[in-house]
Length: 200
Image (cartoon, rainbow, N blue to C red; front, side, top):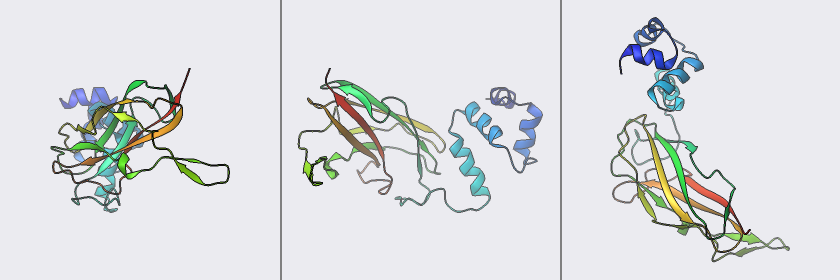
């Protein structure tokens, strides 16, 4: 993309862009960073982190990771927002967007289902909990490939699910793993599909 085209897409003049690129603008506004992010089709979070790294305010995340230059940010739920109602036995596709906010290229990564680490339960009238054995989302696959993603790039990841055969509230949690199956961000909450299953 030419600088002229970048300025046009970002919504400001070429002169303003040149000043920014030369470093004449020491404190760009949020609107400027947002315009650049929109033009470059990346999350404004990535540009903000680049800016704050320049100020030496420390690493962009305190999450433990397998490599100090590896970081991730959740961008948005593209489909199926939290607590959306789906029908019993309904087949649906959940899509997330996550961003590579580190300095490493993501290669060979997968999103892995973590549901075996969680127990779903309902609260009893006496305050106790009762495990719900059959209340779970069934994914078409328990691992999905993440496209190779450069620093600043956004990965779109989709998983197809089938809802349980009876009404309930249910969640399925997924985390990023490397090509060896090791979690890249063990303390990252991951992404999830959380729905209310209803019968009509």
